[in-house]
Image (cartoon, rainbow, N blue to C red; front, side, top):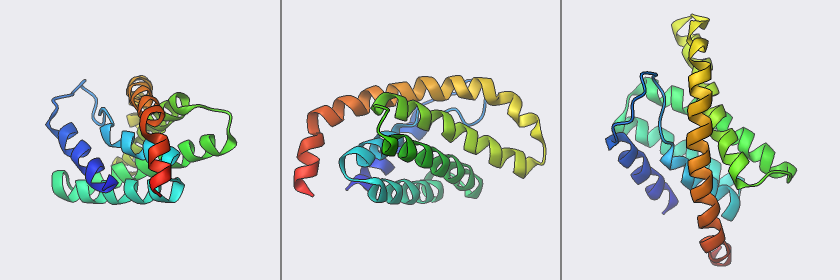
Length: 157
């Protein structure tokens, strides 16, 4: 069910004209599902849905390059969010912001490797701000949803 929801979020996001002149800037709607799962179900479930969503969305709405970029960003993002949650000192909002930022960092690392040019890191300031803003928006939404339905999700497990 959560994989379907994440795929729907990816599809909706692909329909939204959201372009700031820098490749890779997205709202990250599917990350809302990942953050919810990380808090309500667990890391294994969140990681599974994240990876499957990236691969399936890449085949459905993107291409092989989009899969590699998204996997790099998604895995780095997930790992950072998981570590921050595990340490227990951060709330949903800063964890989501970190996820948004590190998703962009992961994509830039892959881009630098693919094009064999480190000049892509000139996009870093713009992508850091974009990750901060979109991560904050997703974090606020996730925090509200966790407060409202988080307990019910755990009970159904």
